[in-house]
Length: 233
Image (cartoon, rainbow, N blue to C red; front, side, top):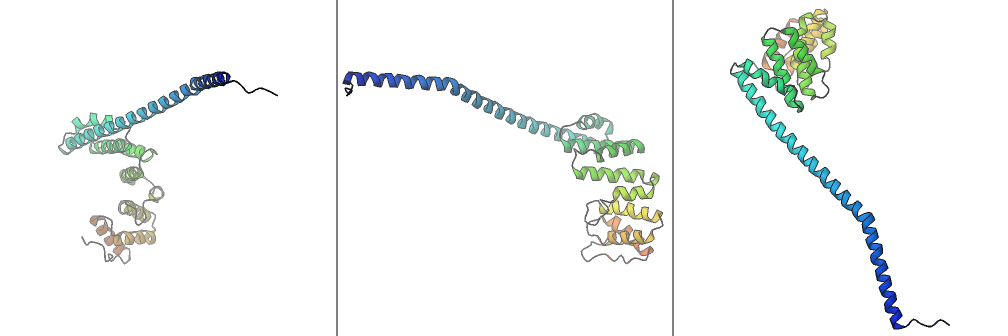
């Protein structure tokens, strides 16, 4: 039969066990503690980078907004030449909205210089830029088509504006009117009259557009009485 360990031996065994545990903890810390520190530091660095990027984006957006407003103020004051360098810079902005607005302004300046071809090309570039918001692209498409209208085949006008020439679309008035005239050029009086009638009854088109639509619809034999909610001109 084995003899029970003496009290001194028990104390010795406890010290050995504790030492062994300390060694294991130290080894584990060396292996995993450093990895944990690296992971935490990496996370903090990533967070700091993201916060810095956010602050930079906000600062850039604020600066772009101030520059754009200054350029618009110059345009309203008839100082187009002074506004052009700022617009050229903003036309390359990382902020999609500021870039679109600057490019739209550039196109209008070209139109003001009787450079219809250059203005149409600028509007076409905006309309084709998938990185921009759809409202900017739709506006550019309407402006491009208005400039090119007299040189385009009627069917091309109809196809280009088809998504916009629909009641309820923000650009229904302008797009619908051009589409209706294109139908007239194709001798489709029925389609033109129907579309003019829809524009005449729309509540969310400009009064001047509605008034023209009422007149055209009447000439084409279409009832164009404004809807009850429409505001008379």
